[in-house]
Length: 321
Image (spheres, rainbow, N blue to C red):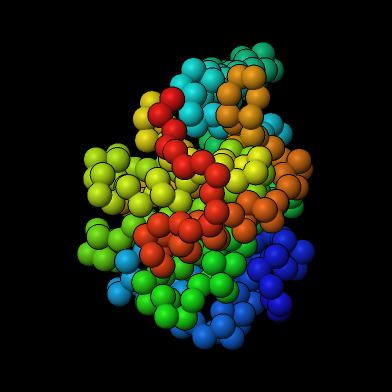
């Protein structure tokens, strides 16, 4: 049972198995129906279950997050979504590491058997085994940021959304994002006509970092009328910043990629090498800052209710570099 959104972190910290997901969905439905929402599940491919809160047809906005838990990896899934060369080098490094393990295993098998065909088949098996473990391996029990933070923010927005504005927004918790954006793909297929016009606000890893960034899709970038209200919710709030990344290199792989007019929202840490997202998929993913949840709740609720934020911002600007 949930008494408040932050209880997800303590009561339903892992949502990987079918039973763990079912228990979470039941608790979330009970909590949300208690707030007066209509809630239902939608089935998709590979057994995914999306939780839909509100009216998916009449809403102008979708606020989304994936609720499934990622696999635990030996190294963090490091992302530098605003910086091309670190992004590319890390991806190449990960791919090279996988190929190196595969090649070394194949070589060892060949030394033991002197059979090329056996070593090749073993190598293929090892490579696919690594891929499967990365996508669907044992759950990472520490997932405060990825993506308990997004789930908590969606539930907190639903809790505080004014009743006379609830018809403007539908909240959706996607399943199987970690397996390849399967839940959001199923939702898009089922609601293509409506999502062609809706603005999708996808929350993924928003709990750890002072630099909150909004990554619009390519189609949204070209539609300045739709994009402009997002600038108005941006600004500097104490040590936190919320900015739109609409110029320069910008890649954030998450569920918003399945929708035409959408943004991915995340929190990034700062270093002398630039902004980055780290710790996820490892035991170090333990930080969920309530300040980030409250900031995004306030900004995005204002966007939905009146198209602009009235939250006492100190400095409003969009990021261009």
